[in-house]
Amino acid sequence: MLNCREVTELCSEELDRALGLRERMALRTHLMMCAGCTQFRAQMATMRRLMQAYAQGDAAGLGDDDAKDEGSAPR
Image 1 (spheres, one colour):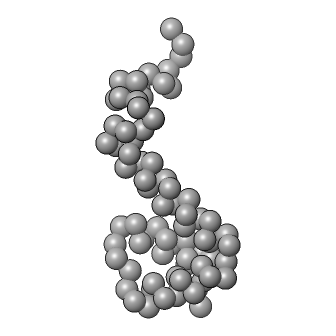
Image 2 (tube, one colour; image 1 turned 135 degrees about the vertical axis):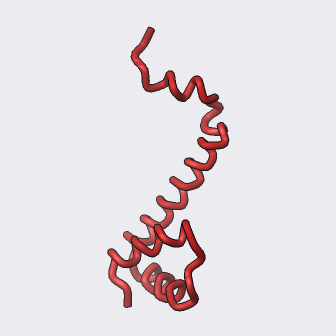
Image 3 (cartoon, helix red, strand yellow; image 1 turned 120 degrees about the horizontal axis):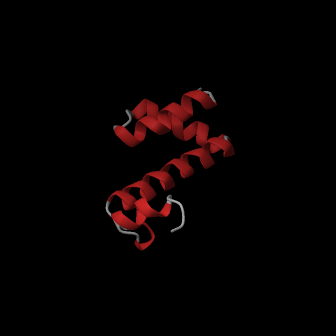
């Protein structure tokens, strides 16, 4: 059975590649028993969706120029 460290690595890897059958089954088994890893996986998925939306210019209606200015000092 996978430990939490191995599960977090698999959660990251599954964003970049398709997991094999054994990896998916081991991941699913661990997630059924571990609320912390389940939450981590959900947070990873949310971050990926937000980053994809931002990259496409859909983040909270901000354009590229507005996003750059948001971190700067007030004028």
